[in-house]
Every structure is written in C-alpha cells, then in structure tokens.
Amino acid sequence: MSQKITFYPLGNAETVLLELSNGKKMLMGYAAIRTDEAGDKRYDITTALKKHKSFDVVMFSHAHDDHVKGAKDFFEFDHADKYKGDGRVQIKELWVSSAFVLDSNVCEDARVIRQEARHRLKNGYGIKVFAEPDKLDQ
Image 1 (tube, one colour):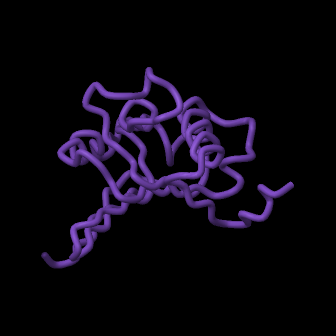
Image 2 (tube, rainbow, N blue to C red):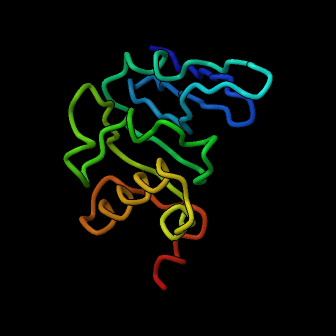
C-alpha cells in the first residue's frame, strides 16, 4: 500500500487524513458539516470518514468549534457509556495540546474530548499531549 494524504475542505479548518504504507491512519482535526451565512455547504466529513472503523491517531490542535464540531457524536469515547458503541469510530491514540486538557471555557464537543483526554491521562493509555505538555505538571 502506498501512502496517501486526503484533505477535506472545511473552510477555515481543514481536516487531513494520512494513510501510511503500513496501514495506519492518522486524522488531524474533525468538524462535521455546517452551512455558513451565505449558504455555502461545507464537506460532509461524517459520510466521508464513516467507512473507517478506527483511527490509529486522532489529533485535535485546539478546542474551537470549527475544529471539533460533531466529534462527540462521531467518535467512541471510553470515559462514558453514552459515547460507546452504536457505530462510533474508535480512536486508538488521542493527541491533544495541553491547552485542550486545561481549558475550561470550551464548546460541548471540545468538553467531551477534554474529558476523554483527562480519562486517558488518569488511566495511562492512548494519549499524547503536545504543545507545552509540562503545563500539566502544574
């Protein structure tokens, strides 16, 4: 298998899927379809990515709505039963910035991802914190 990179045009916040030659898949960002004020319908990321049952890595750079919208309904999260099963896509390793873990004033989707990140940190599995991870020591 060759390596493949797919860009999903979501306007201000692109989603990128990297498929490696060893079969691993990394997703950078996720924001479900939305319509702007002019009626410009963006890419239907949910339909495009639903064919994948899991991702080896899912990275969220920051907790803005245009980078996480719909994630709580698409991905499976271990920290609460209501985010499990029902055709949800699994995340083997979650990558977030330290700000994502520490921020308290975030949208609902970002809050769910933050809870998952904290759960994985507490339980010592499937998490990588980038961008000033030493802030978590405080």
